[in-house]
Length: 279
Length: 237
Image 1 (tube, each protein chain N blue to C red):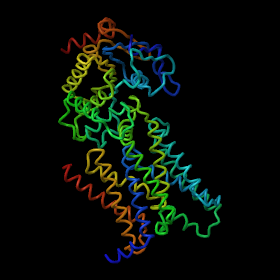
Image 2 (image 1 turned 60 degrees about the horizontal axis):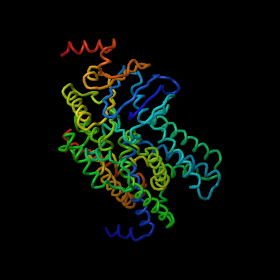
Image 3 (image 1 turned 90 degrees about the vertical axis):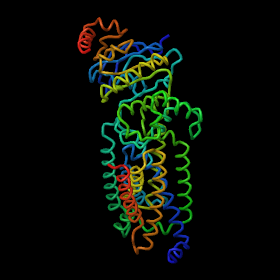
């Protein structure tokens, strides 16, 4: 316990906790909508696209890679969520295609053009999240904080619309709710969260951050509001525990630790759901 | 003045025409049943009436003070809904969304409206239940309540009894007929159940690539198709 308090006294650790918990909160809010819209894999797909964009930024030697990564990811998210159910290539197939394609191309570009001495190290940390969460600057924390507040406020203000569009897009459109606009909003927020979350858990594990809390909450709760609240609580607690665990357990990567906690929570909630539901 | 006038509509997708030369009109208080075989363009017609799709050609006009927003819609069940964690109350309330206002929450009047509508549909006792755990008939009542929160003018029902057992089907038809009779709500129903259409509807539109018939129900019974069904229905009862 004393050791933990000692850890917490470092500003780096505090930053990591704040950023980690905020990102987890944002991704869990979105997660419920994305899972219900059958876009569980969008986190995976978009983060691979972001990885591809990152590779381009690396080659172009941009000091601020967000300038390239963010626009590309946002545009991809809009295209993906917009096509929806009427597309020629179904949502899951186009996602899978994009995800693998971007990953391969990104890796190709890095290997062919980048002059880095440690390519595999760079790639590994982009994919699985680095220990860089412990080396965040206060500027990073500010960016992340502002984004989180933005996401949470947007979510609260448009909560009713997000529910309507998720539950029944056609009905919403038919009765005069501008469903396309809200789909666009969801897409942009998703892209924002994913790009920022890449710093925390790496691009491979973002999906977990998006889907696990939502799925766990849906095991136990049966209405939308409760599911959202519960998944937000699960996600923040899991992120906190994961970061603490990775500090205690020597060398445990932060991203994997958070996902591990999420898996345990999911198992527990499945069990509770089964006992309560009797199914 | 008619609430809805369609002239020479041609429907289809990807440049392929599914149905054409569809002309009909709906007056306030009508009960129009759109019948036809699978693939005859019924669903496409519904999407067009809801402005989810543009017609290939032809015109569709609203009149009598009706606007697009005033068409309540009872959809066929979609895949998403079947495992959606939402309480009955949340779903019914979501029908109030088109009443506008930039509040992030529902107003007192809207909650009251939702409560009244649920009572009317006989689902008050289910208010806090999870939608996906209800029976098919109960789910349809919930969606009907949501549509009624959105409008009191026109209801567009897409195969409202699909998958329901005979007893619940009859209850559903009676409920819809009562809304039409007592509340003066215009009903536009898509169905492949011609027997029920003849029994409840005031007008019938029979589509099959080209419209086979549009007019009052009693005239439909004089057409060859209508006659055949009337005789079949007579034998059943």
